[in-house]
Every structure is written in structure tokens, then in C-alpha cells.
Length: 435
Image (cartoon, rainbow, N blue to C red; front, side, top):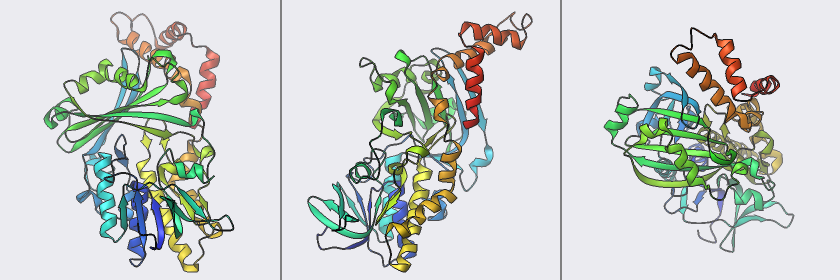
């Protein structure tokens, strides 16, 4: 970056949120001078994800994007369930119409996808800079933000868009958010496993280019660790990982990689990934604070988008984040375009960004599921309830069991075995309204 160069907008982070914002700005005003800065070299090397994009957010800026994006597979099946130490209870939903255009969900390898999206931004005229770490935001004599500090130099701009990811240093250093506690984050650990396309198709009962997205509640882990697992089909690889609540990881002899290994060794998962070859390992912070732990989303000359804003939702059935990132980047760009008309980039004008978010599905989703943590942080969800559920069905389907017992008797028997009280069931049942 040249010291004398003045940018209209500086975007920090070339992930889905930052690149989408850059594209929207240049589409609306090709004369803008927009800088898209990423600390990864090459761009995309710092971006990791389980790898499913839901919905049509990208269509707002790139119609028919699926014709050129590096898609691994179109998701037409959704699986979700519970895993105990040995057993499994998994529901499978299949939607053949998702095979048609536009795709409802796709699996991607995030590095390839982010690289492609940043190159699309570059084709629109965005100045893309890789391998550059931004140190802080700069302020004017009145203490208002007015740019960035990089390698000791100040670069002023009308607006900074912070899109530097879940563990955003800039929102913390600038005072836009407070220090987060352990319970506000989860740790995602993921592997990409190589497996021939033909074997993936056979094991998951798929046709070529069609895929499955699976999430599981993982029980039976050591020391009361609470974790969820995921498995997504790519073209000739599988994205396999766990997302673990950090405040439950108290055993130093059971590190995150062991949690993933435990998940992979479960009989249900093991048969799906056997004979695969490890090609990539990564870990990633996942914000789980919900709507009550969002940072300030705007200030004078500053907007916060994507993971940096905490726009992630995991409710046990679906994990969403990439679509929120894309949409929030577009809404931030629209807010800036509105501010340009009056040449006013103070928070008085930029507060329109928050209003746009409230009207969008992003904050509506987060508000709808604002109480989800009372469910996903319940230890009984990971141990007693999966065992109770599986125990009931196992008894029902075991020879000589069904004629002797009706369902209520089976339920009472298993409830007693798993030491679940009626009071606990009632209380936990009430919390399901947040689901």
C-alpha cells in the first residue's frame, strides 16, 4: 500500500463478508477507490470452515454465481442426530428439488471459494492486497475513527469495514467490543479427508455432484466435554470436524485433536470415512455469544461485518455463518453508498446499517434463536437424553421386547436407568421453545 494513496473504503479481511462488500461497492460506483486487505498470503489461506453455504445471498451481487464458483457438491440431503459412545440416532431428510437451479445449499472448500470471490472483486476494480496485517484503527484529534494503521503508517479513508474474522483483534483493540468469556466461544477443529469420488457416491448413496450435510450432537466424550460434530461431502474429499464448547475442555490430557479423533472413531462415522487420507487440518474460533454478545456494529467511519460481528448460528440442526457474512457485507456496502449521497460517514448516518440488519434475516434469525444456548449448553443433551432416546428405540426393536411393553413403560424404564427426573424433563422441555 502506497503511503500517499487515499481510499474511499478500506475493507479489512477478504473472506466472504469483505469480498462481497467490495463487489457491491464497485458494482454501484465503478469510480470508487476500494482497498481489500487480507493478512493471508495467498488470500484464502487464513479462511477455514466446515464448508456449506445455505441460501441465495450471493445472487444479490453475482447472478448465476453457481455457474462459475468452485462448488464441490449441491447439498440435497440433510442428516442430523445423536451419537452416544457406541450407538447413533440419525434422521435423514432428502430434497430432490434442491438439485435444480438455483442451488439451495452447496459444499465448498473455503480456501478455494474465498480465493475465487476475492478475484471476482479484483475484476470489478477493487485494489486487493494480500499478506498485510492491519495493526489498529487510527483516530483524528477528536478521537473519532478515520482510517487504519499498518506498519506504523496511517491510511485515512471515509469508511473502514472490519471483516477480520471470529477472533477479531480490531473490534477489541478499538473498543467496539468487550473481552469475550470462554462460554462465548467454541473451538472448531476440522480435517479434510481424501476419498475417491466413486466411493463417496457409494457410501452416501449419491449421484455425482450431489451431496450431504450432516451435524450431530456428540455424547460419550471424556470429562463432560460438550461437542457437536459435522461431516460434509465434497467432490473427492470429506470435511469432518467438531465444534466444542471451550469452557468444557478442562482436561489437558484430552486436547482438541483428541475430541476430533474420538468423533472419527465412532462406529457410525468410522464406516463413512474409512480408508480416507488426511490432506488438511485446521482449527478456528466460533463465536457463540448470540445476539446479546454482538459488538457495536457501527461507529464514526466504521462498520463491522461477518464473523467479526458474531453473525454465526448453530442450533443443533444447522450451522450458518457464510451466508450471514455475505449478506452483512452487502448491507454494509449499501449503507456506505447511502452515506456517500450526503458525504456523511458519521455514526449518525452509518446507524442505518443496524436498521438494515434488523430488517434482514440475519438479526431476525439471531433473535428467534436467542435462547438456544439454554439448550445447547445443557449437559443432559450430550449424555442422558441421547442415551434415553436410543435406549427406548433399542428396547422397542429388540426381540421379545415390544409385545411385553408399550411405549410409556419403555420410557419410564429408560428414564429411571438414565437417572432423569420428571422435573428435569419439564424444565428442559420448556427451554425447547427457543429451538
